[in-house]
Image 1 (cartoon, rainbow, N blue to C red):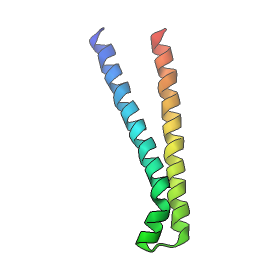
Image 2: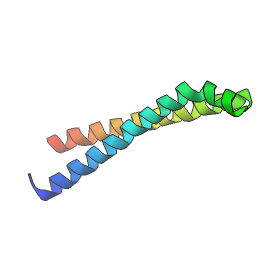
Image 3: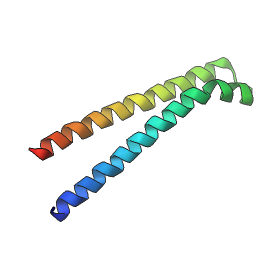
Image 4: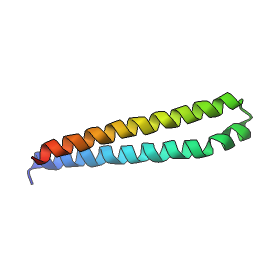
Length: 77
């Protein structure tokens, strides 16, 4: 394995970890949204805002994961 391939593999693994953390964070935000709104005494519209942020995180992660997969298929031949 050449040093260039090792560097690109490390970059892909790092990007994969970031995607996983964003998915986990978005899921936790969606689960905790009602509790956060009630505990902090916020209006109900903020719960919807938390859900939209969570959805945005999921969409971002899906796009990045698909780009990673397409890039990996190109590199393997």
